[in-house]
Image: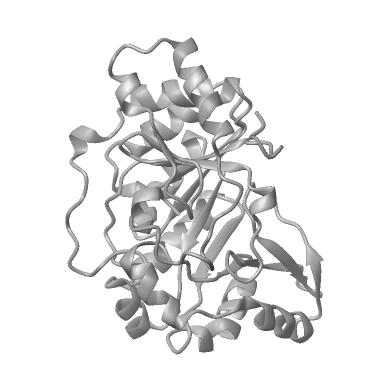
Length: 323
């Protein structure tokens, strides 16, 4: 399945809820509670149908996202249903890990192979400042994921000047000691929290150069369908990734689209283009009709985001689209 710019689209990021049990300052306002009503969410049957048709068009990778996907009731059942769809050979999950302590093993058994964990700091007070939550719950969840055999476990650290940029080396050491992959991420201007976070924007190019020298790192590679560039650190073999949507965008190799919990297919994280799938799903569309909608949607995928040129155009929160 190729878009109009010749990019092969094989990766669907599936948001199963816009709700989250944390309030990361670049994602959701602390007192925000105007979430979608569960009645508007796609049902498991609707999700499975869409994924089956996406698979027929060549999508092979599915990532469960949110909000926080582990707040969706019966998420393990959904994971199992997706993992058994013919043609889907990679099912992963993005999470804040606060609920992983009890769900890591069931998710692994259901077919989730690997996870990304949002973890921006190792300092208790700073974690509460950034997320409003408790660091110990996230760390316990990471331990549970490791024990369950989920691999690789990638730690996503959104870097913010004056807030957590002084913790990079400590986080690298933490990840190396636990066989975790660290990925540093630039802030993105998505929604009001994202607009505010751009004041703490950190260009990762200089940090990448510094870490390459400090850890005798060379270019590396990690499995997955995402945009990160990786360094492989010296004798340890640990990987450090860099996701740089602003300083060095990767739009020319974009291979993904995003489906929200209420059935809106977003074609670019940094644009407002979307296609409504919920309405045809609930008004009797045939499989052939839905396949045609998906094919036409992919052809309408924008060439690139405009984070630098139009930094205030995406008003929806990051939790709506699933990152």
